[in-house]
Length: 175
Ligand SMILES: [Zn+2]
Image 1: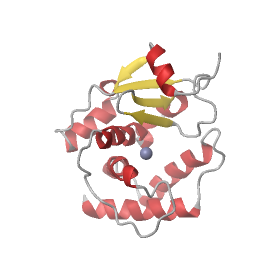
Image 2: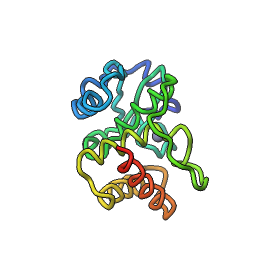
Image 3: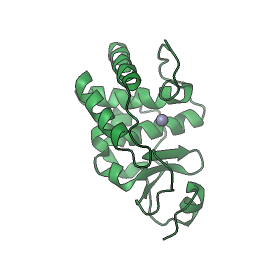
Image 4: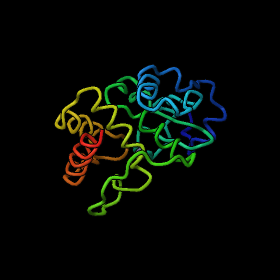
């Protein structure tokens, strides 16, 4: 199979589409805490390793038109870490919805300390905290994902470790 370069092409040709309704842990979380968000029709495309574009290190992608794309390896254990919830946050952000919370920006070093990551990360961390995960458990999950991204090498760093710990504690206090 020829590797595709852009998701849009794939999404248009895909028959393997679902919507966020097909993921009960996502629906239950938003229903419980953010019932006003109209999310159930956001498309979700599960992309196989063969179809995942060359050079894409990330395991999920999103845009307003095409919805969410997630790698097949990621979906199997997604209820553990909540990347679909993160991506729903991106779609809400793209729709221009107000940010639920603004994290204090003490320093800048690129991703994940970016304006358009605040809403997605807030929802994702709220989900993880609501599941009862401790700070160390969240860090272990994040570290595992960022260390295993295909094509991106080792993307974990001390900076991310510190950032996610600060984020966890700020959000926990806010909830
Ligand atoms: Zn993101």
